[in-house]
Image (cartoon, rainbow, N blue to C red; front, side, top):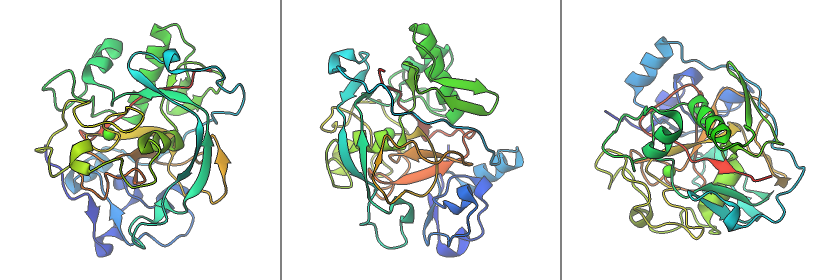
Length: 317
Ligand SMILES: [Ca+2]
């Protein structure tokens, strides 16, 4: 499986269509007139994106509800989390970055204060074994072992996993799904995708740096992966005990892609609507620029590639 350039030059960026794949242009999401970033990043080879565009994988819109601010998870401890998850205590942090070279990652600005409640999040990316145990199938392109991350799944596939696992464990499903309309139920106690803020807070593990250690020690990336994903949990974890937050596979989060707010926020859930969902953390096919805790890319939610996976969350309301 080929993996092409992950970003385009300035001259070619202006020719790209928002429907052709993942870019960092929030103009492709909001429709608001805004200068394109000087550097736009691509997740996928041009040939594949062209093929998918031809197959009708264009942008579309769907509803998205807020997580809500009711019933904070009081009394939640690490013992409350499922065995495959780690408890991340609530707190405040500075999300995003103002430090990237000008024009290189405009969508990471402005750095802004975010406050979150505690939550449980997958210790690793969801594995193929974990997926098969719930879904009974394996959509992955790379099938060399059950401990590899499940990949080649869309945002909708990740939502479907969350709901089916919730139902299997007697929990209330977090998502109400009607076709392409997906509404998050803030009162549900089931599994869901992390919000973008939860993902970054968890990935940082308290660090204000761009990574939680030297990249080769913590991540499978383009220079050490041999051109494929690897077993989860084989690189050093961050301070929360979370593995592969950087590298291996990009991770779908719940939010629509959009510009960051400048003001402090509590339990942010991203834009109310959009055309593309956010992916975080870089992958086995991407370099150190993408494998940073603040790096953001986005994709129409129906697309699926061998560089895309996820890890679920439980908020334990
Ligand atoms: Ca990852």
